[in-house]
Image (tube, rainbow, N blue to C red; front, side, top):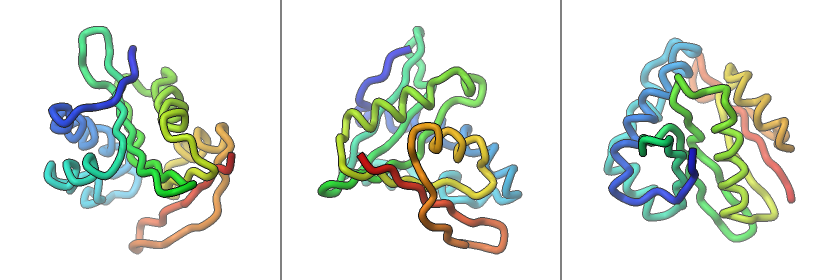
Length: 150
């Protein structure tokens, strides 16, 4: 597996992987209208123009993971850390998280995940992220905001 910066021609494949990876989150919440499942390619292209996208590629050149970051001064906002469902639990998400932190060295990192995403929360906590805010966005969904200070 290799982690590199994504290019614009990767965006459709990353979006397809996003749809696949967020199915488990949607099942947890019993809500298949969560933003990662309704995001359009044009929106991903707008994010790409503003941020940094990394991709994890397997030996055959298939994108099996991705993460986005949006540096803003001394802070970086990390978003949509995704790994193909058949590849989860193999350290790919960990490597992507570490790679995006190295790519966007900041005094503070911020990300969020769903309150029922225990595996995600535990991953982020292992790397020094702490919860600092929860925001209820619907009757079934609460976002947990986490930060890490360097």
